Image (cartoon, rainbow, N blue to C red):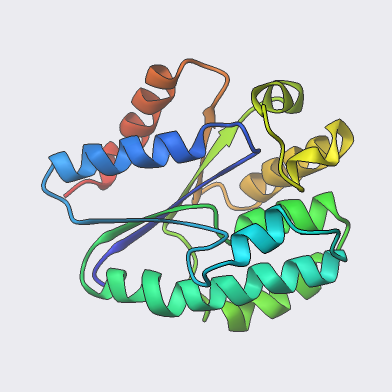
Length: 199
C-alpha cells in the first residue's frame, strides 16, 4: 500500500465529523491527496438509515449490517484509495463496532474480531485518533438522537470504557485527544499529533 489509513473514533457528539473534515482540508493544503469517508454508509447505500433510524435490531444483526457495509467500504473505497497513494480518513471503522456492539451491547469480542478478519481483509488503520469525551458531555451535545445515541448514559459509559481499553491495548496505533476542548484546540492537537507522519 502506498497510502496512509487514518481513522477517527469516539462517542457520538465528540466532533469526529468536524475534525475529519478539518484534517482533510489541512492535508490537502499540504498537497496530500485525501479520500474522506465514513461508516456506516461508506460501502452500502441505505444501510446508514437502516442502522441508525430503523426499528430495533438484535445486537448480532446490528453488527452484521455494519460488517456488510464495512466489507464493501474496504474493497471499493479504502483499499483502492490507498493503492493510489491517498491518505484515507474514515469517520469510524472497526473500533466503533468493538466499542459499541462489543462493550456497549455485550457481544463477544472474539466473535466480532473473527468476523472482522474476513470483512476487513486484515486491514487496520495506521493511526486512530480517539476523540475522548465524558459520556455526560457527549449526550448533552446530541440534540436529535438516532437509534444508538438514544441508548442512554450507561450505554455510553460502557462504550467509552471500551474505547479506552482498546487504546490501552494498542498504544502505538491510538492517539487520544481530549475532545471536551474547543474545536480549534482539538484540531491543533490533532495536527500536532500527526506532524511526524507528514511527508
